[in-house]
Image 1: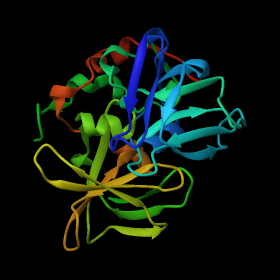
Image 2 (image 1 turned 180 degrees about the horizontal axis):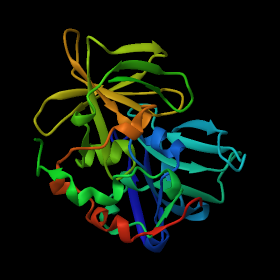
Image 3 (image 1 turned 120 degrees about the vertical axis):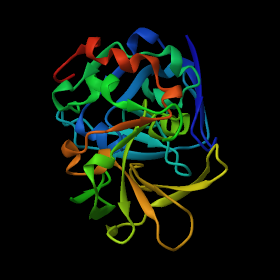
Image 4 (image 1 turned 180 degrees about the vertical axis):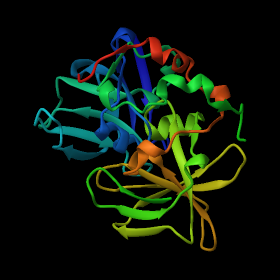
Length: 136
Length: 134
């Protein structure tokens, strides 16, 4: 399906094609720190379909268990995470786009949870946590 | 309890005092975009106990639905969100992003705010296939 998205301040806009069946949660500790939250939600977009306006800040993360470096791109003005990809010049083969910045995120439900061994113990019990429809 | 933490690249480190029973999930759409995820997890730290030990975050000022302005602080080098707070000087709280706290295992959310914009699939996480690595 066609996806479009932007960071919070609007400096960076992206578009591309993504398969809703390929949406994944990542519970790794790097993603917990990089989002400041409990996990990340991402979907791959093929490089040939990926278009972007604006220039993100790139952070080269080298702490993966695999030893492989990854570029983590975020907006330098508002901090919104945009994607991760392989290091290198020019268009890359794929961009793992952060679902929270996509306009169609309601249609992008995760189908798998990676690195579940470091998942926060409470994430599967959210229904038991008190809910306020707005701010409590 | 005493907490310490920092961004992913190590440029920013901080410490403070936080009450784990004050841990909150925020499902607002601003938090979805600014985290790139489904929600944020935060805990307040009183300004009197909060100390930045190293680094200087970039500040992005966001205007909420209420019209109030909030400073959103993140690491300029790795992008990790660090806290939000009120603009200006004076006594104020820092809402620390729990994913950056070293003691985050002990910060279990007690309340979920802005549940009206909660991602619908979150209630089915227990049924979503789990993979121990990737």
